[in-house]
Length: 229
Image (cartoon, rainbow, N blue to C red):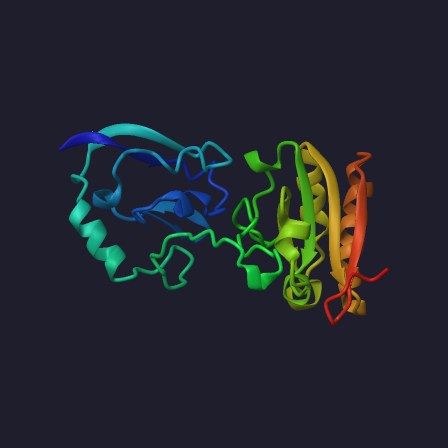
């Protein structure tokens, strides 16, 4: 049948995976670093993936394609089909939990506003970077500091990494993000351990390389979960 269906321009695709995250039907996957339409019959033609794409690689076209098979989609979701990244899917809804009186007012609601968050995976340009307050955090800080979401992630775009585990210098990637986007401020959250100095130095170098004057600060978390004065 002739119907409206998405078209992916592989030349423009940067493999960020945001389109696959936005596709509720799991019609899109990332193969060899590029987004692919895996199942025509899983694509409903509504285009939830279009606004998620930071490079404009996705558009609509009308062509001969298999009809949308809603029952097949529901069956696949019930079987917890793997996500495009290869992780097993949970097919669960996002639940915003309200704080209980036993938690002394600390909410369990996630403050994360974008995905992905790993420095190595995040695209260099994305709509959420426009006017963003950037949080660059060491992986361990969110585990060490109990109220990390409310005190640090809230109202910020979050990037996380560990220079020791990734064995990479984040300077080049962070420089490209700062240069190519309207970043309003940068907050670095690191652990007190020496290896965390790599993430602080990468941000400092990126800011210098960018040639921009952007307010930035560093917060250090102790191994027992306190903010180091």
